[in-house]
Amino acid sequence: MSSLAELSGVDPAAIAVTDGVTTLTWAELDERSTRVGNGIEAAARANGRTAPGSHVAICVSNRTEFVEAVLGAWRAGCAYTPVKTGWTASEVGAVLDDAGTAVVIADRDGGRTAAADRGIAVVDLDERYHEWLAAQSPEPLADDRCGYKLPYTSGTTGRPKGVIMRGSGTTPFAAGWAGVARWAELLSLPGEGTHLFLSRLFNGAPQTFGFGAMARGATLRILPRWDPATALEQLGGPEVTSSIAVPTMFRQWLALDGIDRSSSPAPTLRTLLHGGEPCPIPLKEAMVDWFGDVLVEYYGFTEGGMTVVGTADWRKRRGTVGKPIANLTVRILDDAGNDLPANNEGTVYFQPAGETRYFSYQGDDNKTDEAHHGESFTVGDIGYLDDDGYLYLCGRVADVVITAGVNVYPAEIEQALCDVPGIADLCAVGVPDDERGEVITLFVALLPDANEVATLAAIETAAAGRLAPYKCPRSVTVIEAIPRDQTGKLLRRLLRDQHR
Image (tube, rainbow, N blue to C red; front, side):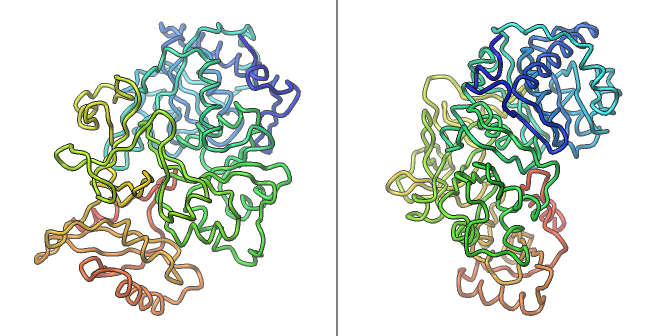
């Protein structure tokens, strides 16, 4: 098998990955991931399974061993799923059952317990892992093994489902490694310097793109845990050229006290990629003013749709999430499945090149069919295309509030009010109303030094001036924190369900 250094065109003695505790060269990562792959195969075989084609669940926190585990499973020809480290044993177990997992690699009790309850082999990173690794064969794995990631939907609106992408299980590792490098190139992630990983390593898009930056030759530096001040300091390191963030991180950076924002805090940064949740225009403007034209926004989801926009284009079309990447087309369809003209809102679909479906949900043909219109697919987002084909998002079908027969998108409310002084975070939801069916209620978390009375008055004034009367919140509730999952995605349903 070709070494990782050869595939990425780097010096084997150069640093491949570090988490501040453990630092591995490309040669060391190559050997260790090979040993992990052989160890997975041995563990699977001991349980009557075969490694190529078996499933591996990876429940590992932010440490270099996560990278070893992913590369080991991938190179061994396994399907692998990084699962959320904060999940309970029951939540992890649902994935293990659905995927028919053969081996679990874990440093979290949820993963360990779920595996033990099912008699699944466990590689415990905190229990003599280095001894286990040293005992595994360093013999190279075959070049033709076709491992792949089996991602699971986030489960914010229902039980997570495995997403099988077209071509899964048919692409040799070397070709797959080149493929993630191509993703990084499309997103302007450079192949030199250091890529700083700020979020949880199990996060789907940041993980794919972070590995893509590595595949192009960058060093991966892992932040063990998110802390706004530490992350900002690390981002300003002399060798950091790229990173990925979510708007929640932007808010926390902008809320830091005693920060000089007259110049960029990251002078060597070339690309700050962001996505994962809508980024309100005022928030992005503040970040662009501070960091400069290094922001690159993506819109995408587990199932594979993707649009991208750089800062220069975004300045001309504030609010856009860009145009689709190569081999994808965006379509806006009405409820009957007809294409809508520019500047008309409808359901956002992605149309891949080719005659086969881009993905399927594992074991759920009905859900797969519901997500498709012919070969085009959707996750239920609402948006429109402008005259030049740039996509703008309005909200999600599942979040739509129907008040007196009129559709209102909570994301629009949040966009309009997010820059009100004193607000740290906010979430709009629909609640039942005897007269109108539903009305908007707004939940807000305040900045530490905010005056609650003044902030509530400012929200009312801003809403009256920026929103039509039927869109204005009928009530505003101050809470300690807006609920978000480990990836930073808004858990709107938790607040909505309080009023159902």
